[in-house]
Image (cartoon, rainbow, N blue to C red; front, top):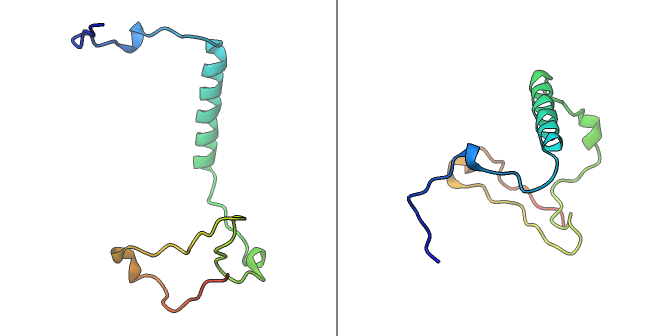
Length: 88
């Protein structure tokens, strides 16, 4: 089978293979509206009371999988507090 690499399909050349086109455009419009709404809202701020009683990073927060605390890369390491221990 030979493939003609000189042919460059354009968006107008593509054909929908299945599903209603209206459903796809509706989904895209909803995503755009959602993004615009999120952009217009102020940032959400979590009250410190929500975090009361927490003891820090838990390496076993996913059952059966140990996720170690990430190590900062060199340019970011200066902004990290040294000496903090991980909760196990």
